[in-house]
Length: 322
Image 1 (tube, one colour):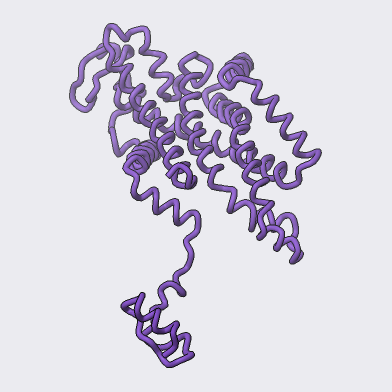
Image 2 (tube, helix red, strand yellow):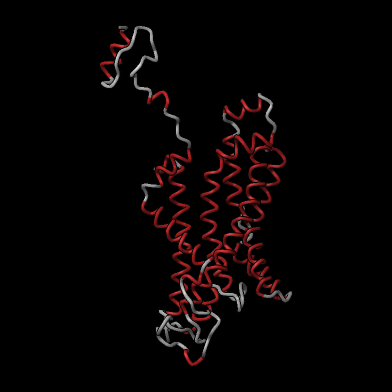
C-alpha cells in the first residue's frame, strides 16, 4: 500500500485502501469527485428557503395574484351594486367591513380593485424590463458611441419625476377624451416608459462585468457571434440583479398607479382601484375610517410583499449581504 493510500485511510475513516496504484479502487468514497457544483441560482434558493421574510412576501404576493385572477373566491358581492340607503352602514351579512359613502360593499371593492392594480403594475414592470434589457445589455456589451447615447437617454429620463410626468401625460389623455380602458393602457405605457432607467443601469453594469470574464473570451475565440455570447453566456450571469430591481419596481408601479388614481388623473369609474377607493373615502375618514383603511391596507400589504421579495432575493444573490 502506498503512502498516499495510508494517509487517505487514516484521514477518511470510510476509505479503504485498494491495490497499489489503483486510483479508482473499489469501496473508495467518490462523493467529492462526483458532486456537481451548484449554480448561483441554486445557492440563492438555498439561502431563500431559510429566510422567513421571503416566505411571508411570497405568500402575500401569491395571495394577491389569486385574488386578482379569481376574485369570486373571496367574495360573492358585486362591487358595483350600491344603494344609498346603506351609506356608511356597519358590517352586516357578507359585507364584513360595511359599506362606503355610496352604499357599496367595501370589501368587494377592495377585492376587485386588486386586478387593475396588479395588472397595471405587472405590465408596466414587464414593459420597463423589456426596454431596460434591450438598452442595458446592448449598451454594456458594445459600449462606445451606443453606450454614450443610452447613458444620455437614461440621464434625460431620470430628470423627469415619475409622478409629475404621469400627472402631465394622464391629464393629456383625459383632455383627449380617453375612457376607462384607454386610461388603463395609458398608465401602463407611462409607468413602463418612465420607470426602466434603474434596471437599465443595473443590467448595463452587470454586462460590463460579465463580458470581461474568461468564459466570454473563450466563447469569442471559438467563433461565437455577438448574439450567442450575449444570450448564452453574458445574460444568464447578469440576470440576478435585474430580477431584483424589476421585482421591487413592480411594487413601486402599483403604488404609483394608486397615487395617480388618488389624485384624480389615473383610473376612473367604473374601473375598480385601491387608489380610487382611497380618493373617494378620504373626505369622510372622520365619519367612518374603515372604508378608507381597508383599501389602504390591501395596497400597503401588496406593495410590501413585492419589496420584501426583491430585498430578500437581492440578499440571496449577493454573497456580501448574507
